Image 1 (cartoon, helix red, strand yellow):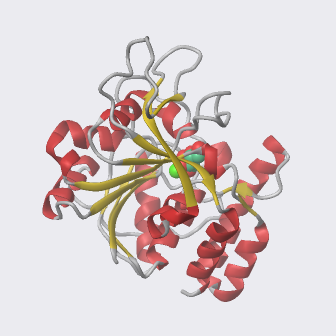
Image 2 (cartoon, rainbow, N blue to C red; image 1 turned 180 degrees about the vertical axis):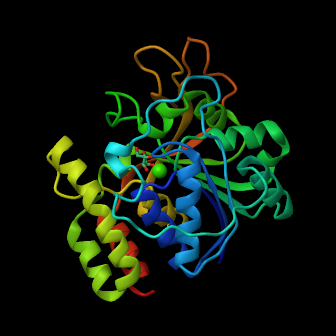
Image 3 (spheres, rainbow, N blue to C red; image 1 turned 30 degrees about the vertical axis):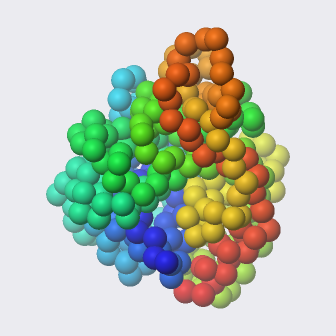
Length: 315
Ligand code: RIB
Ligand code: CA
């Protein structure tokens, strides 16, 4: 079965891994890339998305999206993690092609309406564009096949604060709207991505088999590996954004629970994703009439990494 997807993204080194993984997967048709602030500005994310799609020989539409969160001041971009250019400051040549004339939310709305019931939205950054698309046309909720997002954590600690994951803390209001909409959402958060450690050997083997794409990822990832080494004492990096593509290709790689998800929008816990497990009721307000979200809590890390390596090595 071919999965039609739109990737909403802030590339970003692990976003680049996810995008090339999706381009390389025979069972995935990438309908377009939509961009959002996060790791870098929306402007830079758009340039990086254009560069990846052109350079990989997959010139899909790229639509620029939000450069700020819905309701608050933006946080600083994560250039200390991904480099100022988002690709680890390796001086990668930039594409000189045009983006789609539509904004990211318009592109999402148009594409979902043109393919009702068929489009999976894969979100790899703050959820601002998805929330804006819902505002623009609330009916898309019933026409999207699935939303698969990298973000949040329900049992695991956060990576920006003790409780908040980066994509959710960057726009918690958008996150709360996306988790509250009546569409099927699967959350691939830190609960699983912190169980998958990508070591440099995997990228070296991909580079040996696929020198162009593997070479780029391996070079760009050195900055990312440096961050993990210095900030966390970890040899390798967590497999964040590309885990969503593994889920799209083979959901059996993940074990999931269901529950309502709320996102804290202010205070010390801002950006925290909290789950009310399916079947539990609470005497406090705020949990009633919320849809169930599928939350990944278990993952087969060996098979996920092997799927990534096989797919990119075969290009
Ligand atoms: O917390 C990990 C997420 O934050 C990933 O999407 C990464 O690219 C950064 O945006
Ligand atoms: Ca990302």
